[in-house]
Length: 94
Image (cartoon, rainbow, N blue to C red; front, side, top):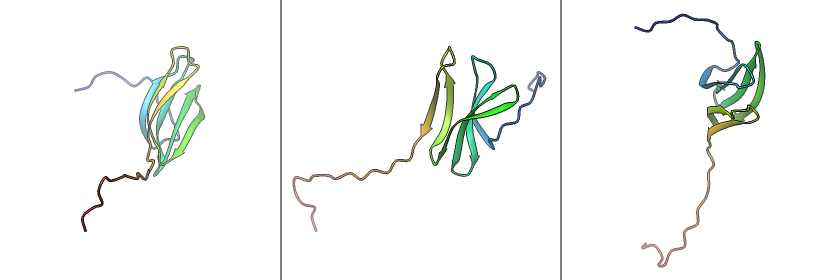
């Protein structure tokens, strides 16, 4: 059984949080799903939400600040369709 107590709760405009990290400058960094196919990363400081990044279709899932708080790394699962042309030594058999 888990133990402990809730010290505070925070509201963010993300329906499904995927990543939460402490911001070295104060507050939290949160990444996740806002709505279907809409993903965002933001900063929550003193109860104020600041949007840092928003994408459609690229899942933002891992948020980590630099030690000084000047940068934020975000891992994204990106759907980037590519067409490959394969040069064959011999034509395919009919």
